Length: 330
Ligand SMILES: NC(=O)c1ccc[n+]([C@@H]2O[C@H](COP(=O)([O-])OP(=O)(O)OC[C@H]3O[C@@H](n4cnc5c(N)ncnc54)[C@H](O)[C@@H]3O)[C@@H](O)[C@H]2O)c1
Image (tube, rainbow, N blue to C red; front, side, top):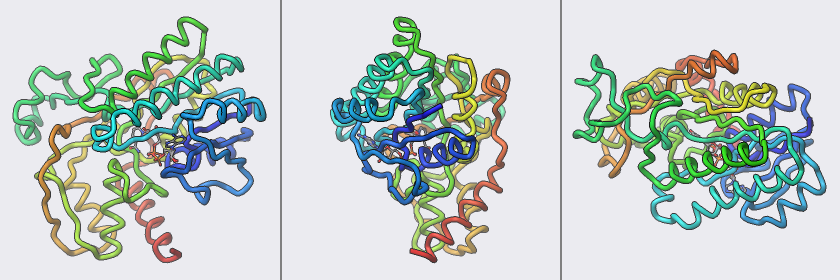
């Protein structure tokens, strides 16, 4: 099956391309190269430099390649930027996705896989009773919020434009399914980390810490470091995409580990792995930042046969190993 991966030169997209290629798929990548890099891709993968806002550019790609399935990873994904520039974010994340959906309909593609976000779509969660006392520094924000971990049934309550963009795309995808029979899988990723993540990306706390620690630079934790996130290794996320593509299912699935890790713990694990001895500085907690989020992924386990296989220590070890090599060869 010929598969188009949008955002294919990016962090997650490039891993999906490699996994698809290994599984014997014919793969084509499309990317504006805003944050993606051609060097992330094997040399034999056709890469179209196209902006998903450019409908005619995408139409030319579809006419030339006639993909049978689309794995849509291309997006602007910086929460802070999405608040500063809501129009560009909506143009890329919503209108760009609609351009693809129209082409997927026109070319009668057999599957549309969409990268959504568990971190930003659900919003603030209420930690379970036993951990609330130590982890809820949300100043009451969590009161009335769905309890953690989030399931696919938890009510989405995005707190930023990026989350609203992704939720809006989810609604459009569901409408294309209802109105035109589009088979789709929406994957709501937790916090993804691993090799090739850009250390400048906002979501990439693992990449940011490990890059700074390996270079023996100062490191900073925002707030008290008690924020909790669900860190999932990129190979597990790529494998979820392959399973989604091969399955007959249509639906929405959380993709995470189901385990919360606070930022102070993550920091200590990475400091151990990199041999970093300096103490972190502290920066003010960004306004509106979600205090705690992690995902119940049992639906993906039951229906897709997917669960995260790489535990945090092993994933961090692989990531630091990669960052060390990348720094030595840069
Ligand atoms: N990294 C995470 O923790 C995480 C969590 C949840 C969801 N996601 C989603 O996963 C997907 C991949 O994210 P990533 O972490 O690999 O980020 P990334 O920035 O590495 O990948 C996004 C890719 O999209 C490309 N792109 C951006 N704007 C484009 C445009 N207008 N036209 C064409 N290409 C464009 C970029 O150049 C980049 O290669 C995104 O949809 C993101 O929202 C990521």
